[in-house]
Image (cartoon, rainbow, N blue to C red; front, top):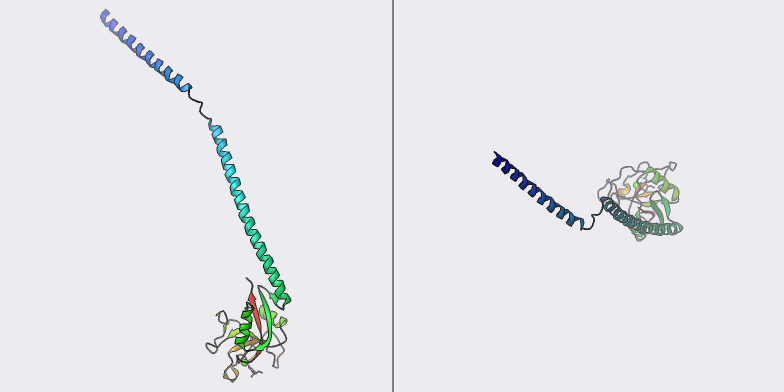
Length: 221
Ligand code: 2F8
Ligand code: CA
C-alpha cells in the first residue's frame, strides 16, 4: 500500500516538473517577443489610408476641372467664331429664322444654276418645313418670285425636297401645280400673278430653265 502511494507521489512530482519546464519555455518565448518593434495601431493605419484617399480625390477633382475648363474654352471659342460668322453674314444680306439663315440670290438664273450659286455660299436652295417658315420667307423676301429646293423632275407629280424628303405640306397657289405646257418641274415661291390676295400659298411649278432669283438656306446646327 505504502509502495503504491509512493508511485502516485512520484507521478505527481514528474508532472509538476513537466509543467514547470513548459512555463519556463513560454516565459523565454514571451521575453523574445517583447524584443520585436511594437506593432502599429489600426487607428494610425486607418488615418494613413484616409490621407491617401483624400490625395487621390484631389487629383481626380483637379483632372476633372482641367478637362471641363479645356472643353468650356474650346466651346466658347467656337461660339465666338460662329457669332462673328453670323454677324458678317447678316451684314451681307443673310436673314435669320429658327436654326437657319437665308439669302436671296438676286441674279436671275435657271433652277440648277441658282442652286449652284447657293452651294458656292455653303448653302442650298431653301427647304420649307413649316407654315411659320413659309410666312417668314414671304415676309422677308416679298419682292419677286424665287426658286425653292423642291422639284418633281424624277417622277412627274412626286414632289421632293433637295434632301430627298417627299413633300407633305405644300403652299401652292390655287390651281398649282399644274404642269402648265407639260414641262414644269421646279417650284418657286412668291408667285403672285393671279386674282387672289397674297396669302401664305404662293408656290407655283415652273419650267426649270426660266431665269429666276432664288432663296438659299444654310442650316446652322
Ligand atoms: O409662266 C408659267 C405660268 O403661267 C401661268 O401663270 C402666269 C400659269 N397659270 C395659269 O395657267 C393659271 C402657271 O401655272 C404657269 O406656271
Ligand atoms: Ca405652274
